[in-house]
Image (cartoon, rainbow, N blue to C red; front, side):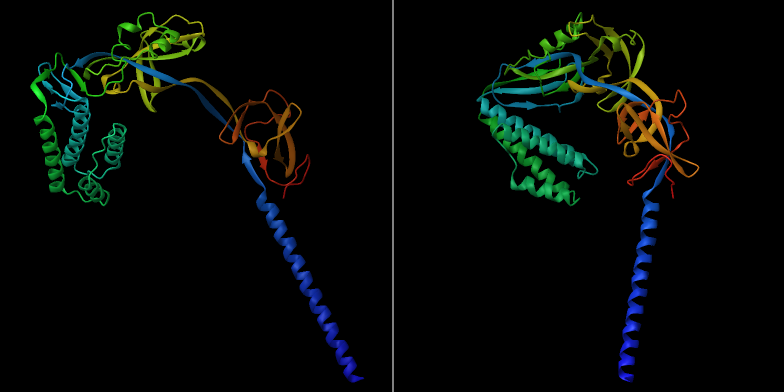
Length: 392
């Protein structure tokens, strides 16, 4: 009997222990849920903000350009790098007769020569911009079917990636390229012909076919529709081997006619030019075309006239309202609303959305009772919420 009593006492003790442990677990769950619910609820202060809207379009650069031509079909040896300011009378290039393939190979050798000469003169030739330039160069070489990337050049690039600028190795690469170009010229036909700059200007080797199309005189009476027609007529000619660009340039941008009404000739306007902020004077405004667009013309500094097609962005208006996180927004039919905290309880506030951006919407300023106002504490939670709910 005493043994049975001991067993009963043991079982009772186990049961009590189990109950205590179960209660502890339940208490832990309740505490955890309380803190989870508390941490899941966030109050966001409703603030007034002004959001700027922008109009973005393609802009085209019209320039005063002189196309340089050569009747020689073979190798060209340029005396000036592309993008160099030259004066009238400066030697630009010398040309020889020969095969068209010789011209292509010579252009590739000359382009790589320029690249290594620039790196040899740079204090930090391992900068990313140089590698991007080399990738562009090699892409052009490959497109012409005559890639010139040797093991010697690969080793130099690898050293630069390790930030090891070996000037002697660069000098050797430059000398090797010069010998290749000399050898190509040595087998050319006939006497060479040299071209000297007829005027002052910025010298470029590259042509895009629009030098004699998008001219300053072509802007006279040009509408957006007529501009699109011009863009379909580039000029291609194997004798065209470079160009001189004068300082004068104009940026032309097509905008809706209602937007153009805010622009006055002679006034300067702020815009983003390839994401860079510029202030440019308006020099011309076309008639409205059949699509309801107007071509605006701006005087463009020569420094920015290197590209033909650019991205242009204008401020087109602004809206002031209340910034609301979309995660807090609810909707019933045509009504948009959020809940705000008022004396510890959820209270519904309606609003009129104006625009949406980056996970938020802009609510119009209130015009009556029961609408979201600046200073309200917007309730942000993933839990179910309703009018009058106590917020803990």
